Length: 174
Length: 336
Image 1 (cartoon, one colour):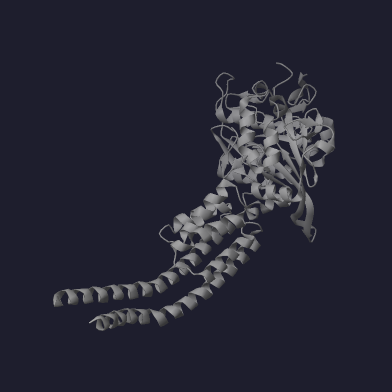
Image 2 (image 1 turned 120 degrees about the vertical axis):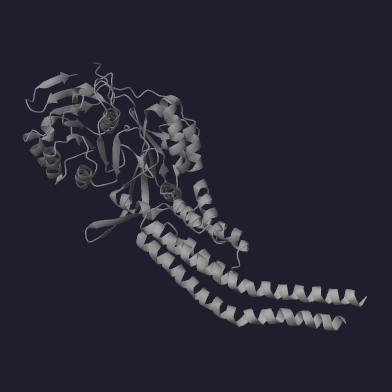
């Protein structure tokens, strides 16, 4: 009986440690996703302003360049929607972002910033595009700083919390 | 040689081309009506004019008429299909592939080219800055000119242009608007680029400077029209600069470009002449004497740059060759 109890206890502790680690990892993932967004947006700016590619091609190229990233799915989907010609660039971007945001670790506040990108996506001259993308990059940059601060603050806490809560539960059960 | 050089007969190709390259951009109610147009109408269709809050107008060789609800042609504007300002804007955005920035230069010049080579003229309120037009806003009219590629239309004309199997005469095509000047130039380019054993000349290295994207109608860099296998296309480049660039970079035997006559063309053409490269080009005009009133073209004519003048008109349908004149002796070689 005692063996079973000890085994159960160990299982609880291990799983709570894992939950803590996953929670802690989420912070890291969010910063990584935000950083990916920034670098993809920089590529998008190049695609638009220097290569002068049309939006759907520019977005597809961005997605392919960063195909390892979760956030590439926004650009891939938006590109597909634009190719279908059913909706405007803004609508396509909104749909692509809102439908794929769950695949990433981004939050509601990040989503709102990303949606702003749609406002003048493709509908102005180069200058306007540079300004728009630059503005979004700046805002995402701010989110990165915030996420970094949160990460260092809460990451260690969640790890410790995982271990401690596991031990606490086991002690209470015994 | 028959006086009518090419026949714009209706073929499946044209309606397929319109279906693929034009209708997806138009609002659904207009495209579905155009789809129902009888084949003969499509064959004659030259322009589709969209004006904000006005009836959709179709322009054919015979004149103008309104587009009705069910693919019928009507002359009473009350029953015609109307298009809203909003739909005009949407149409243009779609034609720009949602990338207005990429078409900024084109919009500034007043037209964009669609995949398939159709040219869309834009009118609205110009935004200017220090005398130069920056862009056009509040778009009120779109004029879609349907591109018609007529393969083989220059087959009978080409023997007047080719000197021997490896070289050609410097040629100027003269024609008023809508008489098939660009169509003819395109087919000449194709013939020279491909070469033709039956007509007795080899394929030549042709450099095509397609300033308005009308001849090759490049879409994403790939010519949508047939311009020959050994033809290099410089798309969207200003003519004068383009001619010199191609001369330097592609070592052409023939340079083809459209609509000469602006200041500076003389110097560029002189460069081509000095390099021993042949030129085929076009100019707006009704006849040679009228062309002489244009200073830049007059200098070219007086200096005998051109060996052949080919005058087109519309008397027996687009592409009728009115006369062909030897540029040195000014003798008429062929007359309709």
